[in-house]
Image (tube, rainbow, N blue to C red):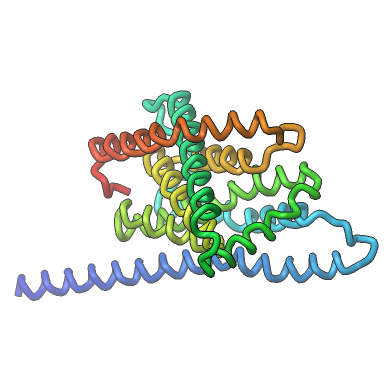
Length: 288
């Protein structure tokens, strides 16, 4: 009789775990779908507005900023729901025993290093893969998507790409997706799955690769600190390095940034490895 009771308990536990996993997957899909829904309907509104002659010169990045803010109005309450339901407090600062100054410095080094990896990847694509059909098409699409940025008012580029975009993407992929996946499959698979999803989400082969590597670094920062603050900071810095103000877009500044990127590639990898090792020693690699 005792064995039968234990089997029933195990069955109910498995059943509950599967139900909880299903609910988490539905929550993730629903939450990430919000961006697509907002993009679709606001995009239609924006297209209508731009079609009007008197609004023909409206900034695309102003519209992108508005879309990010609209999405954040949904995702921020989601974070408070997760805090109440699962105790996931992404907006907390790193624990007091962690040196926030050193963590910030480490985050800067990681960001510069990943930016260096991005530069190397783009150099490889443009030097050796540009004639491969799939990359040739991706290069054309990539250049087209970024080609008009110099003609946009920089204030809207800055707000959309450096401020609101990183906040939105970090909440989506580290705040929601990584936490939900890590809850059921552990941190390792959570980091890998959310990082691949982040890369694929950009829908551009060239970007898919370097954004996936970037996402791994941001996921390590998040898991180590259990705070979304440093990933948002790093993400903003990464985007800023790629969209400097026009007054700073000089050969000298570009060379300085490129050299720093290359110098910090190896230290960035070392920092990510050390964070992973330290986290494993403290909590075990799959502690959520």
